[in-house]
Every structure is written in C-alpha cells, then in structure tokens.
Length: 482
Image (cartoon, rainbow, N blue to C red):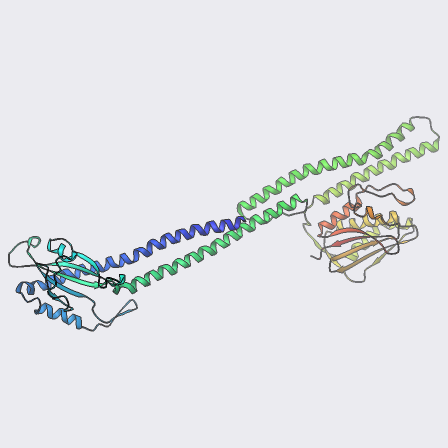
C-alpha cells in the first residue's frame, strides 16, 4: 500500500472516529436536553397552577370552581402559533389534582376522576414534601408514548403557618406528552447529522488533497532517485518545505558521489589509454639514445611528436566530454537554425576536406529549427564530419542532411567509406573505442563519438550509426522537438 493511501486512511479514520464520538455524544444529549428544558417549564407551570388552585381546593370546589372553569377554557382555546416552523393549534397540557390521600378530584381531560394516584411517583413524593415527577407510557407497548408528569403541592391557608411548614391539602400535576417535543428533537438531530456528514466530507476532501500532495512529493523524489540509480540525467524535483530540503540533500549527495566515481573512472580509463602512446614514446627515445641514420632519427622524432600530440588531444577531448557528461540539462536553450550550424561545422573542417579532395554537400530541403546549445551541437557535428573524413575515400563526397519528422529533428552525416562492422555499431559510442583507419592510419582517441552521443542525450535525443545503402555509413543525431 502506498504511503499516500496509508496517510489518507489513517487521517480519515482519526477524523471519522472523532466525528462519530462528537456526533454521538451531541445527538445523545439533544433528547435529554430538550426534555430537561420541558421539565423545567412544567415545574414553573405546576407551581403557578397549584397556587391558583389552592383557594378552590380548600373551599372544596376544585371540580366546579373558578379554577376548573378556567382550565377547561384553556383546553378549548384555539391557538394559532408558529414555533420555529412548527404549527401549534391547541394546549396539550393535562392538569390533574389529587387530594391529600392521592385520589384524583379534578382532571382537565375528565378521564381519571376518582383514581388513586397515591402510588405514582409524582404524587407520592410531593405528598411527602419532596419534588415529584415521573415519565410514564400512555401505551405500554409504545416507547414513543411517554408522558412527563410534574407535580406541585397545594397548601392550605387557614393555619397561619410559615410557607415551608404549611399543610399540604393536595397535589397538582401537569402532564405533557414527550412526543410534543419530538419534531424539535428530530430536527436538531437531523441538523447535527447533516453537519456531521459535511464535516466528514470536508475532512475526506482535505485528506485526499493532503495525501495527493504528499504522494506527489514523495513520488517525485522516488523518480529522481530511480533516475540517479539508473545513471540518467535528472533534475532535482521542485518540492516544497522539508521535501525540497530532502531533494537538495539528495542532489548534493549525488554530486559528491558521482564526482568521486567519475574521477576514478576517468583516471582509470585515461591511464589505460595513455599506456600505448607512452610506450611508443619510451621506445623511440631509447632508440634515439643510440647512433642512428638521420632518416631513422627524423622518423622517431616525428613519432614522438605525433604520440605527444595524440595524448594532448586525448586529454583535451576527455575534458570536453567530461564537461558535457556532467551537465544535467541545457540551462538557456536557444532556437537555432540547423542550416546555419551545418554551414559553420563544414567551414571548421573545410581545409581538411579540401586536402583529401572530399566534397561536403549540405542538403536541407526544408527550414529546420531546434532548441538547444549552438556550440555543443556544432562541435558534435564537427566530430561526426571528422569521423566521416577518416573513412571516406579520396575524391568522394560527404552529405549533410537535416529534416523534421515524427521522431524529432534528424541530422545525418553520410559517407561512402567502408562502413562500420555490425559488431562495432553499438560500441562506437563507448569511450576510447575506435576502429582502424583505412590505409593503416592510426586510430582516433575514441572520444569523438561518445561526445556526440552525450550532446544528443543532453538535447533529449540519441545518436546512432547505420549502414548506408550502396556502401558507407550514416551517422545520425535525433534531437527532441521540444
């Protein structure tokens, strides 16, 4: 499982658990909270009605006195009210009065007259001077049919006692169905759940964005590390924060490690390649210490000079190749006219071509432009032409062709030399690998074509050497369109 998905799942699990916990606690508190508020209101109502009923209760007219008349009138009153979007058309109170024994002497609904309520918690506790309340189902089989009963004592007023010591002559209970508050509870719960889902969705979206960003940063660093491990050219990924610091640290580590390995490889390769010219110079110098004819002496001196020049060229080309290999990209690419640097390259080797009676022909049937480094591309082309001049027969021609196709910008140098053996076509772009020149000429440094290959790669392309139909070779550079 990818780290981005792990982070997303972990983050969402934490948010989901937190939202579930908060939502569960909040939703579970909505219903008790609403009922507690209703109970508080019923307490005030019960005590106020108990005071209003005390005179009729003491006078023995609780069932037909002014109090009973007003309560019955309340039951018949038509109410037009809108409570937070819920319509209310009538009172859903039930007022019950019991005497000091707990027997119902008044019921606003007219249903429970004469019933013994002394065992009910609201009446039982109130008759003993305590706070009495209960919640009872009106239908034993229906959990939603509970009714809240809150009681208040009715005191007698003829004994002159203090209020806390007055005689309790009855109990007034106010009952209200809990179902009356159900719409408010359901709406509150729906709002909580809806916003809970919004919170979960927002958390999921934030988690997705965070996981995508984290995965993207880590993916860029991983691809960079893979490219480095494969020996490819790669730029440090554009990352933010600690990921940017990590990328720069990886790049610095890469530069240091590659620099060390690069030096070791080149020292080893250069040492190996210098052995041959040094051996030739040493042998010639030993012979020069002995008496020799002037012709032999001149020949050995010329050999020493040639081998010295070969070593100097090898070092110079190696430095140029190292500079190209070390570059990761073209820092400031320019739009270049291919025809222009084809002419510049042929001008650079014109003297050598004329000396070998070889004609350089530029064939560009269409305007071709490329984005890159003019100096590097020109030097790469000069190396290809130099290589072709080494193999092209005297009096022949070398054609330079540029075109634009689906692969990109294609530049070809075509000659009519002996061609390249099939076994050598893949190796000619290796450092220090070279083939014998026609006519017994000395081998090259083996660094020209590797330079060409590196320049092509640096421009997003590649170099290849092909067999030419009718004899000869085609050295081709394919460059990226972008």
